[in-house]
Image 1 (cartoon, rainbow, N blue to C red):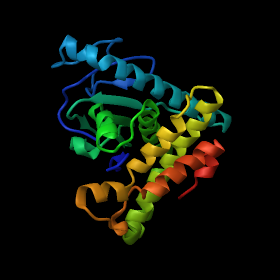
Image 2: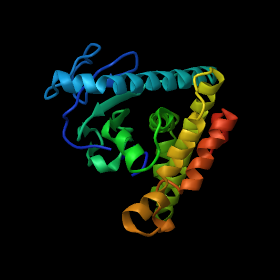
Image 3: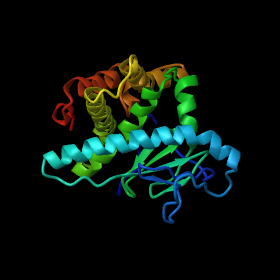
Image 4: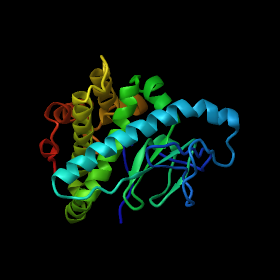
Length: 257
């Protein structure tokens, strides 16, 4: 069994359901995927029109990140199984259970889906001070990094280590999250080599990684910092590991477990 792995600490009851290609995007239901532009129950045409640019962007990033990892897996003689992304507003159900929107985006290894409340991207700017499209792309790439860990068995290994040594559970969680940050950087390196990044994109990504550091979030929400309770890593650690993947372009440079 595996619980959700997240960007910083996403979910509630399904209100939004949008399916856009070419990426694999689900509406949070168990039915077959709808055609491009279809909307789920409870979403008006006006709501759909407002969401469309963001969903198209998310779909593009999802497709590009997964293509990058599919090629990397193929080069290593392995098959990549694509993850599905569920976009929602306010909340949804996953195989890992129902959670609160305040949790932020997360990956559920039990159904191999990435869950993102589109409202988080607004929070990334307004609450965390990390604006920009590449900051949003970093979030998606981080969650898909958890999918890569799942396919490689890294998350299962981490859980076994946590069970055998409960006192190290938080430390091991941090190491898993930092590896996902590094994997996001590996995709960033690929995007840069393919001239898909614009001026300032790297800074946006580094800023987003720092913004969701445990110390930043704890200071903002509690007014103090407790390193022993970290589960995702400090702002400095998250930026460092994202940059490690960005500079190396190699998944081998991301070994933390």
